[in-house]
Image (cartoon, rainbow, N blue to C red):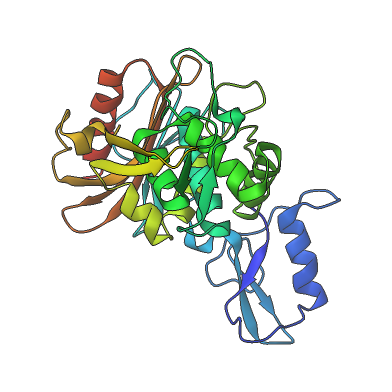
Length: 330
């Protein structure tokens, strides 16, 4: 989460030597780390840098982000039984709760948020995708759409099935359709993550099936999810309670697909927290990752929140804990 951005993007400006050296201190590149004062109005501080030559304030990378260097408990609740959790107030840029947010964990299908983000950024909704033999996933318990070699659908259809039904085979088809191969797409996922400041994660596949070097942090998930929410298509899809469509097989015959959302708040299996409206999000479950959930919600006053729980023990516990976490914002 290093680096700075200029408040005036209309033209390039050269940073003076003093500001540049200060920026290097912030990034910690190639030398010792220097602590800087955190002063809201300081000309050279951890909060902002000031270019004498251009008379311009340079904002730090995290100027418009919630931050969490360690565990935070501002809400009066705690969740010792979960692997990691966080609650971010997007209006006030305040981290209300954080537990193990910088610890690397298995993301399960929350990986598909990054898959969707990359696909939307580099693809087109009407782009036609064709399933290769690589969509045949044999891992026991893997959520599958049931794609067969030669099946065709648009990226728009694939994204709906990816995010609503959480189909692992569709993730492979998206990856190959966007980048030509899963390996190239995964490289793009990791590149995009770094550019977002999500530098403590590593993706090895587009669906979240368990692999040793496939991991994220809860804070990185917050960064990735927040970026994905900037795309209207992503935000529309995660709010949907169900989806039905028709795609074609290799011979051109129609294949029908329909599914309810895996989000149990939207499905109505669990009541939404008091004083909170769940807009949408993404679920994830594997034996290695446990039960995971990330949500965009709003309070009665319109305040938006991103909440995350990783590695809970069961589906019931996951939604009970998420309800407590969101209600604590009030």
